[in-house]
Length: 295
Ligand code: KIV
Image (cartoon, rainbow, N blue to C red; front, side, top):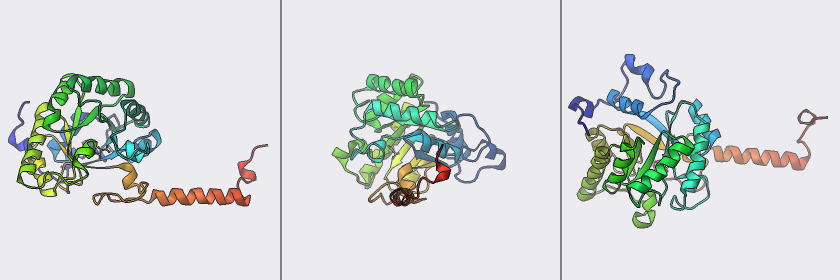
């Protein structure tokens, strides 16, 4: 990889210069679909950006209209959409269907699709076959896969083949059976490994890297050291971008959500109330009325 000048490797975080604001990923003027080149340019400008997961066309269209510039068809669809307990059972067929729906529901956002567990671990050729399906069949602009040094060769071949890759290190939910859901990168050796993983995916050509559930100070250091953007989830405020699972931040997820989730709405309550109001009107004979009937 060509090294960028030092000034570009450590961009100042914060507000955009006025001349740059029309190019902003969020709130900018452009209506064409966002590409990975726009993401790279945002890091050079020191611009922060939001990413949300989506698994269906309708939700994706709402997020797109709200200006969310990057949407992830995460394999969190496993537990947030498909009713599995973890992301492990999600298949490539399922990811292809969900990703195609999200692409159809959006006009501007860059759509990134997760390669599910078992679709890239065998090696670079399997990764290329799986990613090619998501790009050709579903029309996504990039794929995401988990793992740092261990996924280096897969990332390299995908990027050489023209498929942009977002990497994912720290807590990697596809490895839940081996690592559980624990904070990663705590302690000197673990922090050093996380840094090695981050540099490895950057050297392999990833255009961005998700840092999940790592100490805020370590995420800040990785963000300073890398010239590709970091996307934090449970990684503190200093990453270049932040991602949340859409159903979590909308308040749709039942039960407990992780500490790093902020609920911006309570859709579970809203939907439950609407369902009860409908049921009561049907039972009470007040729906449908004349205005809802045809003759
Ligand atoms: O699958 C997913 O939703 C993810 C995010 C948590 C980054 O990988």
